[in-house]
Image (tube, rainbow, N blue to C red):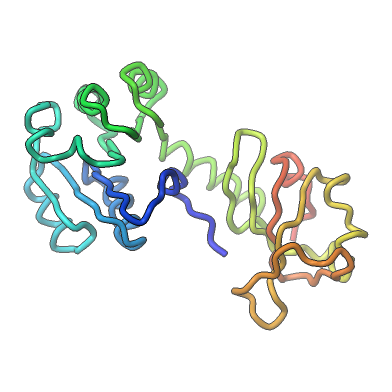
Length: 235
């Protein structure tokens, strides 16, 4: 059970949803690749002819254009304003990023997700109307720190700053204990959602019986307090 790392991609999903990605650096390419693999139509835009050609050659997008996105007319002629969601993946050029975001919102694009490289950059993006601002480097750093300090947590998706959904390796301290005996809600402020099946580790039993016994090394998915996750026994 994989929890997506690019969480904002789940917002506004529909069978006909289209995405435009502006900026084909590492972050932009990762977004394009993920969306394309999920079966969505993706248009990529970059000022670099080389980056555009590479994205097409690597088949990570449906269409790609070389474009100066600080020019509203260029965006309009390319049809960018007609997309459901536009991701501004220009992180290192603050002025270009902010002007592009402003152009998109003034043209009425419904959802604009913008990458920020600093706190000040993020504030500017919010000021010009970005619907969501993401800090990929910060999020990756937090995820690395968590993986080093909590190696039993395989995947983690933050619902808000205080709560998460997490996929966890069942620690030896929980081996052969029943769900009801563990009393996760009172001891850790966590609720167990699913358990991996004994002979099919890639398949999960949703909402298992309270008398089910846990086995160390198998997987469980829980939802609840981040503090509770940090208090779980170490594998």
